[in-house]
Amino acid sequence: MSFVKQEQEQEHEKEHEQGQEQGPRPSGLVPLVLGAAAVAMIGCLFLPEGFPAWLRFGPVYLVLPVAILAVVLGLLDLRHLRGPQEDGGVARRRARIGVLLGTLATALPLALVWFAAVLLGG
Image (tube, rainbow, N blue to C red; front, side, top):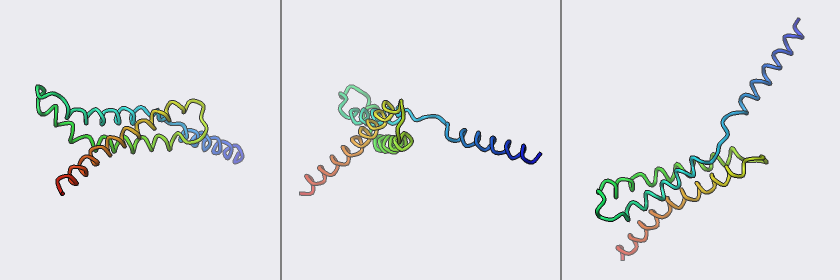
C-alpha cells in the first residue's frame, strides 16, 4: 500500500514540476511595442503648432518611464528565451529590437539635455 502511495506522490511531484516550467512563453512583442511608443513620443515634440499643446508636450513626460520599461521587459524576455529553442528566434529579435529602441529613447533625451547644458554652461 505504501509503495503505491509513493509512486502516486512521485507522479504528482513530476506533474507539478512540469506545470511550473510550462507557462506563457515570452513573445518579445511587449518590449517592441513599448520601445516603438517611446521613440514615437519623442517625435511628438516636432508636431506642427496647429496641434494642441497637450498632444505635443504631454507624451514627453512619459518617454523615460516607457523606455526604461521596454528595456527591462526586453531583457527579462531575453533571459527567459535563453538556450536552444525551435521557435524563439522571432521572439528574441523582437525583444532585442525593443531593448534597442528603449535604449535609444532613453539615451537621446539625456544626450540632448547634456548637450544643452554644455552649450549654456559655456
